[in-house]
Image 1 (cartoon, rainbow, N blue to C red):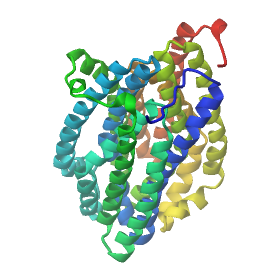
Image 2 (image 1 turned 135 degrees about the horizontal axis):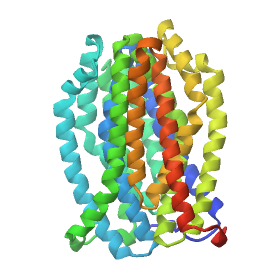
Image 3 (image 1 turned 180 degrees about the horizontal axis):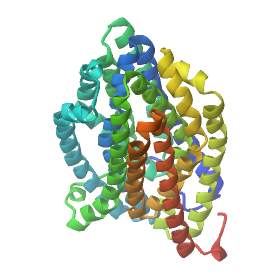
Image 4 (image 1 turned 60 degrees about the horizontal axis):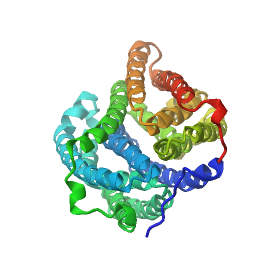
Length: 448
């Protein structure tokens, strides 16, 4: 029987850290290989190609982020079933998840491939990078099944307390991605298509590793009846998954609006924003990982009714987020030019990036805490406030970018990010404080 990890017993700090570090390395490697993609494209193909790949960032977040939100929402219910030791319900939910995932994959693939050109037009994509953006996007969205399969299988494993298998999968796929990127771009001269194909192949390999691990876990071996569920099973999953998916998509729409204004400022700004976005995603990873860890921990313990452990787990993950802000926020504030030159080559793009990075670095703590607060609420089966915070993020981004881009230009993008982070963080912090005090009174706190 494949080993799973019960988080409802034992020392809280040790359990979370043992789960966190493999997951952290996994997420860092995942971000690093997208970072390597950008670096190889920027250095090997030039500014316009980097801008074309970066221009797809907000669209990818819109489509892939929707599927990730669904997967995260579904996995919370799987974690709760596992924590409650209700393995029959776990299998029922897993069977329904697989059927829903097939439908979602088909719909998202058709819509994203069919609507790509129109969406790039809405972003006022520069004519000089339109063709390369289309090539990259068609390949990425055409192989959406691999991306969704990996994210869903990794979420299921995390819900069962396994953060090591996704790590193995990403180690293998990252090495493969790096090798294929270099081969396709520098040897075969395939351009941005090579970078996209390398990513797709790497995701397929990661998926196969995770699915093989899932197949070895006895308690989730599915039978035919697990795929013939009552309507309430699908309703439960969608009630928890759809708000998280909507949250991601709404946030992505705000990012698309920002991308629209950035593209209007010229290719140099598009390239600078692409590079800075890679750094933001990379430097958010430690706290985002703490969010994944606290979500799995909270899901299992709320399923078991152990809300006293939820509070203590939350504090451990807040501590992780704060430490990573001190390290990585300082790097963004005090070494922006060094960071910029790693990806960018032209002086104009570097100039914009050097201004952007310190402004976001000083406030990145707010998005670090946001990840932890929001994920704790989601793990408790409370997706509404996180969804509302996504609406607030989008609203703040749009208002700030529209209000200030005409006067301060490119720097409005940095202030839009910071304002969106802080507003969403405050909303989730207040809601979580109310929920925690309601469910886990101080007098019942325990450390194990």
